[in-house]
Length: 629
Image (cartoon, rainbow, N blue to C red; front, side):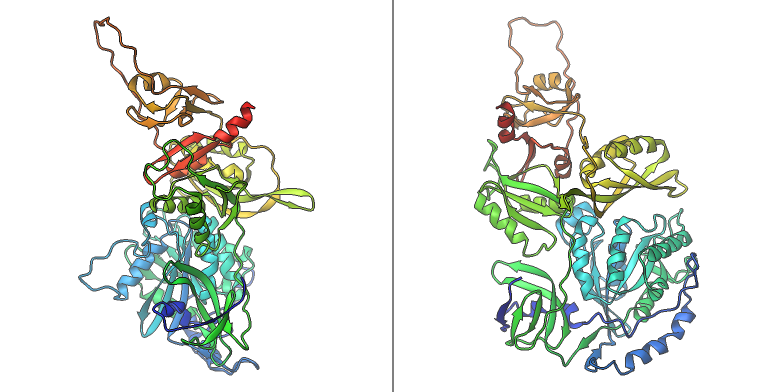
């Protein structure tokens, strides 16, 4: 980022430069850490007792009050503040746990109506039931302000987790009492341990009939060992909870009526923030926002000095004193692994639903996304109306597409492609770890699917008394495109797939991701029942009678390999011969594909047309012409 000199002025947006978490500072953990030595060479996790932890409280305070090493004598400690991030795998209950923490800290009035999953304020978050953006809030417990950052659980939004870990001194690692550590659990824990953060493990949903908290704690302990955690980090405090009911305790069999034990663990085991109060200004920017009227807004936390209105500073990743300020280490964000092409809408229906249809509109919107989405990249394509957008996964890009169509944009998107690398003359591609929970009767079909996509089995174990198994595979990222729908079909909708990026490895070879072709309309118009009845004998339709379509639009899935062109607008010929009996027309229910499904379905020569009200698939006329020539 280019260095610039700016002056902070008393504008309406000036206060946004220092959010609630910015007043809490340095991530130096030399004081205030709650720790015990790990049992020597023991592979079985023994829960820490409250008495043992309490006995360290005086020692922790003495360490915090003791003189700092030479060169750090100006450090100040905020004893009335704790900064934590809540991290977990998808659906392990971290957002629900935050809801209970907010309610019990009396943030809301007694008569105030509060919706569920308060922190998931984005429309897409509420619709999909997942956290997409990191958000912060704060509560007060016994005179101590606890700043809380709720983070996404899906691996595609790992960039949101990576950037906020700079702002805290510890994390709450929420783990499901049945599933235990999952792929995303490993990812976020690894990042937190690299920062040296203290960890409090919360075993959630202990009221489930098949809960196995002891197994989960031991599995989490094994994960700490695998990730080379220090002895102090391995001796984590364990808290058992029912986030939905707002209960917690040090023992799974003896929960309090509230979350008091969890709050006490936070105060006891998460270090107080420290700052070089008398040093030159240093503020690390962890994220940016953009406002059309106010401009670019930097959000971060202070590591040294004071930030005042009217002072001159210089900007990079670090906002520093103009004269003597020095840069802090930059935030490292994992590189994107998937790329998709965005281009202007070229279908005959262009402009019927959207407000923004030109390449200039599309370009401005995509590059504006970079102001707030640090894990995404945008490049100009081969033509002036095409742009290449790279992200951490198909879901990462799908969320952007969905937001854009709701804002009134019309555009075309191409199939997702993995981003390969060439190292020492060898072609490398991204690999991911896939964890699949599947009932035993469908396990054979799922294993066959993963084998076709070059998957390598790493582990297989029973995941509980429900007759399900947990399969762990290492699979090329391109082999995962379209895999979710295939697994759901093979398991009758009962399998659960979770993935996380692992590393780059050797090219695995050709992968066939789709065995069936498409049904393509060779004539535009309005679909008819007569034509649809004949067409459904050739495959599964996406359209129903009375629907407007255009030439080249994909109207269904062919039952055989290869595409088939047909006419779904054909009308029944009128004759003057009256039949003795009217023919009953029976039409199958058309297949409804979401945006995510369409992106996973399309092949190299196909596109997805996105408008505010419709999602259609079509053949790419440019590639079709090349094939014909």
